[in-house]
Length: 266
Ligand code: G1P
Image 1 (spheres, rainbow, N blue to C red):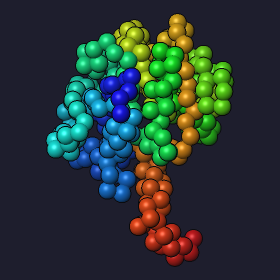
Image 2: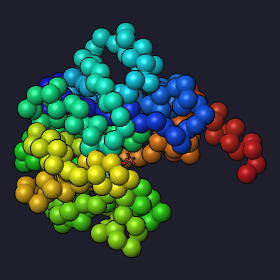
Image 3: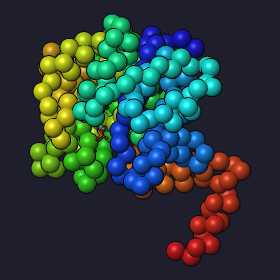
Image 4: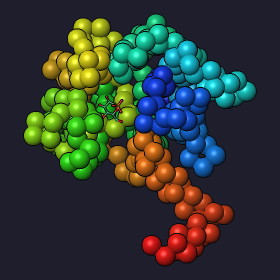
């Protein structure tokens, strides 16, 4: 399968503090849903969308990620070092040279999505039609708002929005809507210029959301409300829920898991 977007960036250098103590020794993206590391779901989604050149942004602590991909031969994987944790915008900026002037995808491995057709593939179709950046959107509960990027947008149809502005990790009272950005992005290459001009934002870090906000002032940026089940596996509850949802769907494991849960009499 060929795609009009050939390259993808997977930021993976996060410290995984919500998973201490295990992340003292294991990279967060190597934590599994059953036996499959979350980063493998990101790579499979890209591969199934026709994207086979992938740059994984790592810190010097992530040697287990190198080891895991050592024997993988059907995807072209490059590792790029982010020397200091300085936000998602900064992590993506490390890939500028590697991306080399092309449009590209970003997949955040914490955001695992189970659906019939890969979210990134649908977003690439939108990008191919409009030649614009595209972000994945989901309506979220109020308690999630202060932890996410949130958009103000106009609905074009059931699944498409045009983004007017976006704000990173707003207080609930300042949030422009309940529509949050989930970790799938297609970027036109000029995003790198916007990131370079982005000052430190929320949490004192270079936020990709601020760069998208600047891009949306000048160009069209679209939002895609994806179908399917989404899990934030960046925290232990989300990882557990993703594991249960994944196991329940498995014909070999599902019925046994359901009868085990019933046997707990909760
Ligand atoms: C990042 C982005 C945020 C987005 C979120 C999705 O936040 O900065 O805009 O909503 O991913 O998972 P992080 O999870 O790195 O705090």
